[in-house]
Amino acid sequence: MTGEPEDDYALGLTALDSHAYAEAREHFTAALDTAVTWEALYARAWVTVVDSGTQTEETLAEAAVDLDRAMALNKGSADVAMLRGDLAVLLREYEEAVRYFLMAIGRTPQRTRVERGLVEALNELLLWTENDPGRPDAIDLCDRVERMIAVSDLPAGVRDSLVGEVVATRAFVYQHRSEDEAVEDELRRLAVLVPGHPRLPARVPTAKATAPTTVGQEEPTFDSIGGGETEGTFAAELRQVFDVYLNDPDPDGVRRKLARFGQSPSRSILLFGPSGCGKTYIVRAFSGEYRRRHGKEIPLIKIKLDEVYGRYVGDNEQNLTRLFDRAIEMQPTILFCDEVDAMGSSREAGESWRQETTGHFLQQVDRLKEEGAAVIFFGCTNRVWAVDLALLRRFDRLIPAELPNEKTRAAIFGVHIAAVAEALRSDTIDLETLAQRSHGLTPGDIKSVVARATDDLLSSGEGATLTQQRLLDALRDRGELSHVQEWMRQSLNALRQIGQNEMAATVEKLYGPFVDDMQAVALDPLQPRPLIPFDAWTEPPVFDLSVLRRSREHT
Image (tube, rainbow, N blue to C red):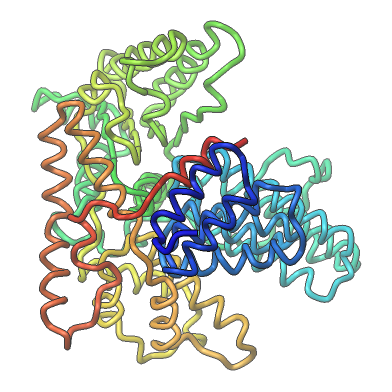
């Protein structure tokens, strides 16, 4: 072996090309003997995971140590978290596997692989629980797993489905214990989360006024959006949209008012930005706010990929038409397409059937205005550069979801902390300090921090309270490089490649001030250190992606 770590690492990569796993492992070990890097740790662990012929309890345990060290060195890496989830499955540590896959969800391009791993790990965990429902910790296990899922970055529909499976298992455990009232409570919740679930009886017990609700499932309103009243934020901009188009529950009244200004009651709005910034949540808040102001529901019709894409030619177009028909028939309506980049993807280099679907999608969006429908159409995406340019032009407004400033972060902390019962939280929690220490975090990240602190509270026993220190400890544990920095790099590069320089400038302008803020903090050692180094937004990546790319190709 050579004495240069980069030489040993390169030799290891060469050995991987010929599937010489034992030799590759030796080279990566030699590289680590000279210098410990997260790439070499990840690479050595990856060899263990893919080389099933040499797996033993000892080698798997060593790989787990390697990945834990890699995660400490490269905080925030979704790829490391995903591989750690794969390893946890091999070790039959299914609760840990669920946790790691949830860490990776929404932050890696390998979405299908992560979702498949998450579902398989959760399935094994629930099967294991139901095979031994008499375990003393069975209910606590279900509670922990539900909480992990409820505060995750999963789309709301997927989150409801997975929480529903946990609720079904908990009902099974209660049934084994002959706790009939608890069983009925769980079945009522399951009926709300997953109507038609195979474990629901023919007649679900009637809901009681005191029936518990699922964690994180309360219908949001504008009041539940921390910092939504702050002028200039995307939340404030969307409040204005509501006031113009939905403040009057009579669509004809809205139509007459807008006609005086030559405007249509139909509006198409694209929300884009990194995951965790609250794009989907604020669309749900439109529905809750409508109910709060007018005392009645507004239809929220979701365009779901699995409901649109059919098996046969023409199915996609027919399914799309039906959804837009419903939105027009039931107006006023909110029509919502999450991951609109998948439905209206660029037609520059795609299969013919996808080009046809995108073209038909454009026609349906045009139809809303042509028919003067009182429909607010929301599209959300993390990958604005992948949206077909013709579809981008259809949106009346393109609204980026910015990172919250210090004042807004304090308000977001306040919203989530207020959800904890007053008797369980200290009255000395300092929101301003929490806001200072959470520079660069998204609203979703802040929600996760409070959830971590309350998890710690739940495990501390009777009499424990949510304190400033618990929240600071949770912030420290969450202290990883924000996924937003990588999103920004990717967005700027992709937007400039397709000639969207104006939008790239908007993204750069929106997030650019954070660089200045972090530099100012770095120059003053007495200030609280931010969680993101000040140069993270401007420096190119310095780590090698060779093994990560190989892992993406591995099946």
